[in-house]
Length: 228
Image (cartoon, rainbow, N blue to C red; front, side):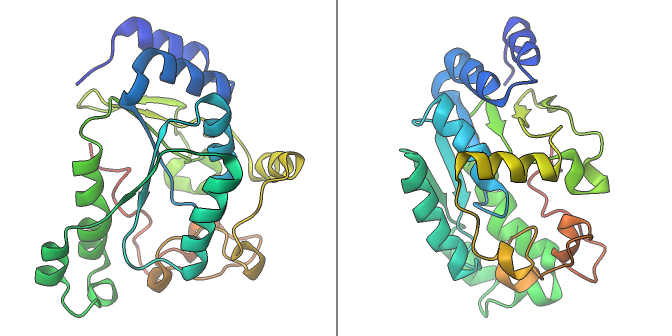
């Protein structure tokens, strides 16, 4: 899988404007573009850009079975608020969950295995039809993302488009307020990066936003953005 060099050049030329980038991707690749969203702390802005560019664009939400109830409610409310018409819930295979995590406690003793089961493998299968995947990752989120490009070509030829890669937290907060976007309800409780409930903790405002993910462990990523 690989997009043409002319398409790649066009996307690079639109990298400074998230809406223009998304419109160009939609115009060139059609339904081969998918948006990955956790409906987390800063997801509303990217999804607002998606809705402005093409509200029919596929938005993929990993329904791991371990989300905060607030996230599931926010997923429904935000999609309705923005007019997103194609939000798709991605579930792990029920038989795999039963075989590999029958008690639902895999996260407690092998979080990497839990992420593979509930996130990496389901998303790998669900994203096979897509030539480009849009993410909400930003350089400012963590040291592991400090060199993140806006347009990223993976070894297998699939693209990652990171429209907010260069945005700072204060820019996102300002633009969300300007657009009147509803925040995730857990942000007010100190959750600056929101994943599955068992592996997410609130952090101080001065902390690395992802410090509350797998707190106390060397783990910083679930794996969906690190696999080729």
